Length: 115
Length: 173
Image (cartoon, rainbow over all chains, first blue to last red; front, side):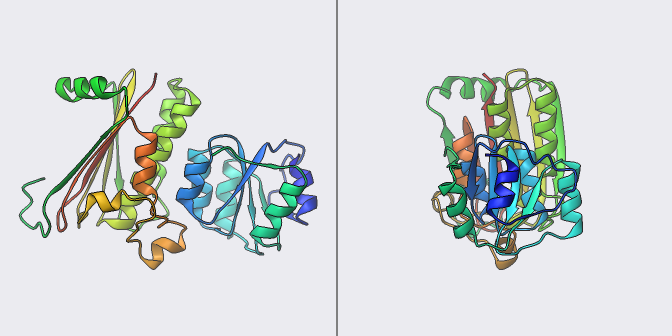
């Protein structure tokens, strides 16, 4: 599944204009708890979260995040988007809930990351 | 540190060594070899803008030194969790990373107020995080268990009303 497929499925908005939407996304994980995300991410992973603070972007310095989907209509502030741009980390916003987003992606064949 | 005069609880000490690493850990602490590189960074209290920078710096240096990606992830996750713990729960502290050819030894020394019951703090899900800390997505009660899970050795010394020392070791091979 590509990032573009994910944007279409979640009716998402891509926040960074130079995002490579053709890149492959192997698996996903969804959580609003930083330690959960750190504990469960051992391979390149799409993160679905409602957290929009700088520490979510900082996570990508520690673990391999392919992109972040902000669920429930959450939108990060400009300085957070800039942090992601510096790291070339794609950001997507969707109005869908975390549950619905996860269900749509799972049904379309995106597997859960190995924990 | 264990003689801290302000202690309001029995001084506590916690040791974990991963199976198979006992001899190497014991050798390291008895010989205390000079590190090839030492990095030091401050961790101000409740400063979630800079918290995590020290861990990212260490990870980037190890990456440049050619450490493999799975070890990099383990070092980064353990260091980040510990760094966040100091920022979230203490009055501030420092992170000191001793990098050797085949391993890293990272120490976190804070200014208190200490951990009343270390065994309890190691239980997954136990947390004393306040609302501000939880707002950032921390406070899952998985910080210390996550450090242990990613370390070859973990040592904590603390008491309520005293500074805390947390140190971990990760071998590269």
